[in-house]
Length: 252
Image (tube, rainbow, N blue to C red; front, top):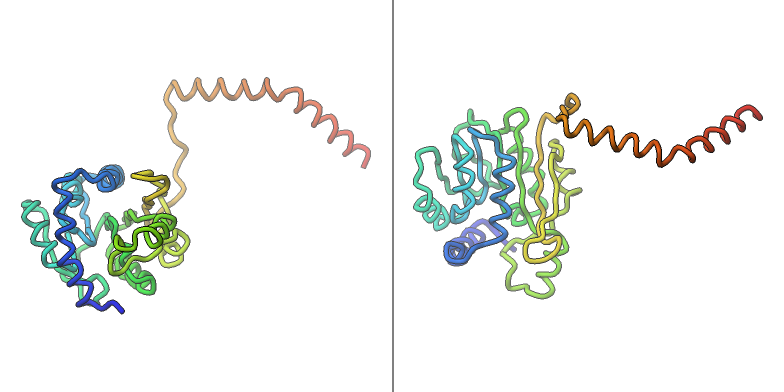
């Protein structure tokens, strides 16, 4: 049974693994950085849950005007703070499952980032956590998640159980959607070291239908070409189908 002290102790010791990422290029983190560059708007206010050693945090800082980075581990926060010495970031040691929030009640976020973190939240606590964080989102605010696929988690449990962390849940999209009022803006599988190994998901508030996309001149001519090619290719079938069903209607 995992409790807060056990989890905190685990990640204080896990920092040795995180430090290795400063020596060896981590493809998984590189995929997450691309996700962040795409979905965190410029000059955003961002909350990063589980900042670890601060490697992904540095990419967030390039897009954000203000970052709040939190982690349950004191050691992680110390490493992240020394790696990212910027004036627009505040660090907090925080267990996200606790009731207390260490930063101001008035603070609202354009994006909340869970980079390889949501799988380390107990399943029965996810709904409560999402409800708490959604209240801190601005209109059209986003929750950005990167996590291992169920298939990869099952593979690890069977073939490399020592690689599992103290809490390591199997996360399914349908499960997450049951526990949030946000809607999917983006979803993809990512082939990092193996096929369909990691999932990237962006949830957003205030999603609405928007006006039709404006097409460029090239898009217009491509559309016209496809339109007439389709009409020519299916003309004979169209005429026979119309003739058949029109005659049937007259017979009835």
